[in-house]
Length: 175
Image (cartoon, rainbow, N blue to C red):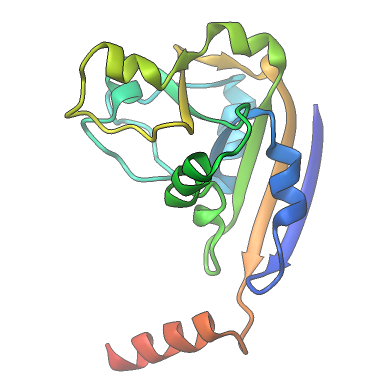
């Protein structure tokens, strides 16, 4: 499995990493969780909420309730609507300044046939459950690390001259 590490300032583009994800399916976790995944040999579903989370625990998440691993599915060509939903659930968000970074586990195409598409949410009329349309897919049960093609590690560092850093500093001073 190929592993690469990228460190960026928050003002630097992530377009090159985004382009690596186009046409692929991947799981995002905090970098701190990567060793446990590799040691245990699998990405486990978090149906009961016992595992640490990267995007927060949502009790009524569609795939979590079905004991699936939630994945980003970037196989569709990005239309305006798809880009909108990708922006709403941006895979790089947990890598923000002050965090330890993220690991993006890109899955082998062998996984694709077993994926449950987001459209199952509509088919089951589970509209009260949370899902990210056009972006999220689920994998039933655990995913063996043998099915991981590549790991992309990303850490985003603060740029002290950026507007975002100035806002964070002002918020800290006000509290």
